[in-house]
Length: 347
Image (cartoon, rainbow, N blue to C red; front, side, top):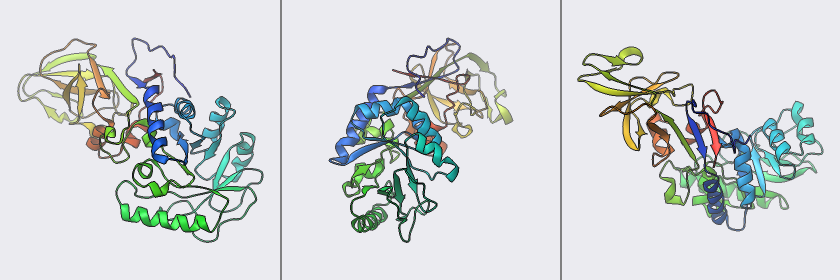
């Protein structure tokens, strides 16, 4: 799960760099916002594409008291590397996974029966998310240690968020003795009343804004950069095109650079028209992004090997997400980290 120390081959199509110091700084920032509440780091989906173990180790080093994953499989993999960590599975586990969860000493989230025995359980209540969680009487078990819920719109709807916090507080008051946890990154930064006993930051840990804005406004530092290089440069003559369906046709002699990254790598097809950095300068992506490559407009020819930044160096993942009509979570989780596609290194 960790890529620290990997040597990047000269032929790498692209390189994802993870800044460990930025991860640790974000944990400190979110911990300060939580005050006395514990910080439980959400490292699911391979740490939102940043490396699950890398994110977990950085979080624990800065005082996180638990790690949160999505599946029993993720938890078991993390347990092998971190034998002493507290690990909580946030999504429901199937009965066939109970034995594996027990053997890996995981804690499970439940929304009803059947309940496993001998495993610490967190009951999820639905306070307005409309997904997992009970709305009626809470399931009873001596193994229940926690009470949790999930906020639907802490990034965009303060009134509804306040209502969810109030509902959760009422349920928590009726069930004393349980560890209560509700807030994700957006609520940690905007709703102090949502802290309860522990907060579960996810996207904020990675220096990405839960509000789709510049993360520095909330004291967060992006931890991920994604870079490639120009592989070929050519000049299109008037009437010549680049890419499928001839979406870009040159009206005048036009230089383009070809970058060996495409939608199979996670550079989405709908990023045509967005910008990347070529040698630090913003340049437009032209033509349709294909599976394995895209073209970028150049005002003048550059040498093959000229660096191209897809995310980082001042080009925010939030900008990329906005251009693609999505959120940063999907952008960073969608980067293909298989060595045949991209190399991930930790610095």
